[in-house]
Length: 66
Length: 287
Image (tube, rainbow over all chains, first blue to last red; front, side):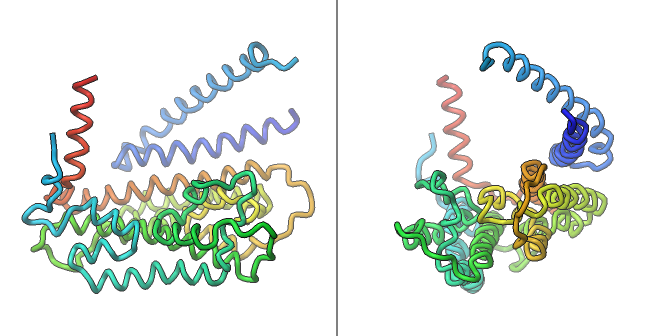
């Protein structure tokens, strides 16, 4: 767990790139795309957070190897 | 329901766009021949196919031998960038395959050779884009007019350059910073180990979609030996290949940008697309 901050930082950076490019792809207007970027980024984080929680839950329940 | 008679070119168009595109996929330049542009077709054939053959010659056709044994299969070469030039890819697989039973040493220029075959595939995709657009432009349109193939190619060559070329400077700069920054960060994290096609065959294919920056990084640090454990090597691989794959989205985006700036879709619809949409519509009704 020592490198958790590094992993989180890398996740934040890559998320930013993915969401920025995704926003440009879905919105032709630059101003609208940049305005929509923070909301889309938060949505992406929340989605990934839910996914991570589900995976962790599975890991300790039905997919546990203990 | 549509029939094959629908696949005849409309009166004003040069040909059926999907036919021109598929012909180009199988044989660079064939689609342009079909559209009546023999000179351009020959030039495209010489450049794209010449690049592939040069790559084959330099690598002795051993490019697919980079694939680990467990990844080798009938369709595994189809996931490489060479798939953009299908005819050459089939020739490559049929003639050289994955090599014989006894392993042979790689020739000195195998990396350059396999990079050239990959670039040939990407160039042919741009050529397909060119053929498809030209087929949809009416015959009386000015020959030699700019088509979306150039901005798409520029977008591949340097992420954001296609947008910059189309006058979308802010978007171009942001795309460049995001994607090239991501690629460079990935290379730093992986200590350049991500730049070897021999080591990471498919990830390398993703990275190549970031164009010239990926190739320059490979020329500068691609041959670096791995002598110690690299803690973030896998993260670096993901960063590098995600940057390249996201650039494909931006290549599509610049195509859309071109259409927006040039009055939308060309006037002539694609009969094959019409037929496909009719089939999909009928399937929906039946379901």
